[in-house]
Amino acid sequence: MADELVRRGLSVVVCTAEESRPSVTDVAFGWLNSHGSAAEPPSGARDRDELARSLGVLRNVTATPPLHGVITWNGAVSWASTAAATARFAEQSGSGVATVEAETLRQILPGLRVAPPVVAHASDEGMVEPDDLRRAFLARARAGGATVVAIRVDRIRARRAGGYELQGTGAALVVDRIVLACGTGLPALAEQLGEHIEVPGVPAARFTFAAPELRLDRVVSTPAFEIRPSAPPLPGPTTTLLGCASTPTRSPPWRRPP
Image (cartoon, rainbow, N blue to C red; front, side):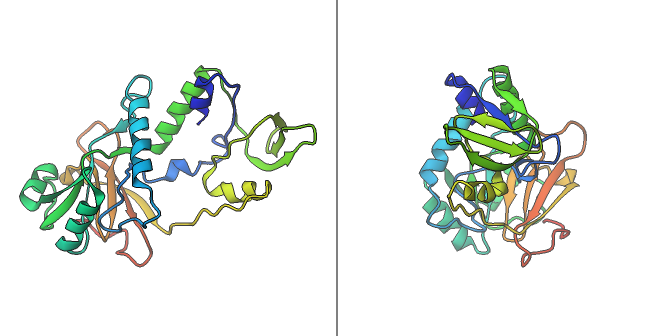
């Protein structure tokens, strides 16, 4: 957002707590997708067309330096508990997702010991180290003239003379307009402006591990777990993976993937 506003010629001040604590973005899973997963199809409220357009914009913006290479667009595979459910998800997802049978899947993911009979393959999806992407956009915004201030904003006060006063861990700032982009911190700040915004929590276990034998180069989502290789892949003989068990009722995070 800051990068885009700078490119439109506006004077921008970014308040970020990156110097005091990790942001929500830093611990995100880093799967860029518009279709969801066959393992847990999205609700009808999800606007796939809008998400697809957003991914297209992101792909174009990151196609040239200094953002080129931050995102790895290798696609993703997912499957449901039954082959019929997986095929139904692929059909409902449209042209961006196709079903792939076990023989072809072994060419895409040769490290899987036991392949399901059919999976959904989304070729247009990507993966990213979220902190790398955030820092790259911040750096480009700063290079374009934005001011980046390492403070956490706790209070917003509308001024009678117009504009807003931002108060937090540093000196108060006075600005004409504000854009709230603070993840789980959004409800508390929005409430101060008379707006009610819900950011639901998603219980999950997040962990990292090395499993070079899997030879993964894209996101894999199943009813038991989701895993993403480091993006871009780290040099060396090992593959660092990020895993997530989506809910406490799912398989424990230490379960070895197939």
